[in-house]
Amino acid sequence: MRTMVLRVIAEPPQIFWAPVLPAAANIFLNVAIMLFSITIFNVNPVPFFITSVVGHALIAGYAVRDPHLSTLMTAWMETRRKTTNLLRVKGNKYVP
Image 1 (tube, rainbow, N blue to C red):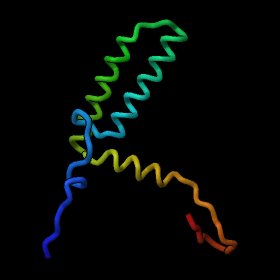
Image 2 (image 1 turned 60 degrees about the vertical axis):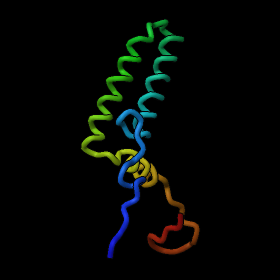
Image 3 (image 1 turned 90 degrees about the horizontal axis):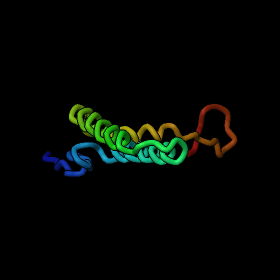
Image 4 (image 1 turned 135 degrees about the vertical axis):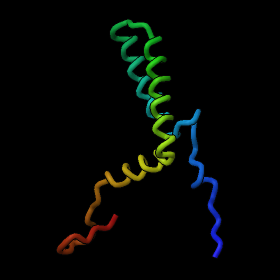
């Protein structure tokens, strides 16, 4: 039986060769640290742009080996959720 491979699965979304979620986290973290450093310590913002580019290059390099890094991160976040036992039962019967 012939099965089709969907493009979304085969090619995950990327921004300049890096997966979307890690690249967005990299930019968000660097911008947040940059803004705090500028307001508190009055530093030059240029080193933060350099670390953003270097971090993005490292993420893109890792994405060559594992292109589904965004999917792995979202799956890891789902497993970190706490489950609550909605029914009063003995044992490990959990309902999400």
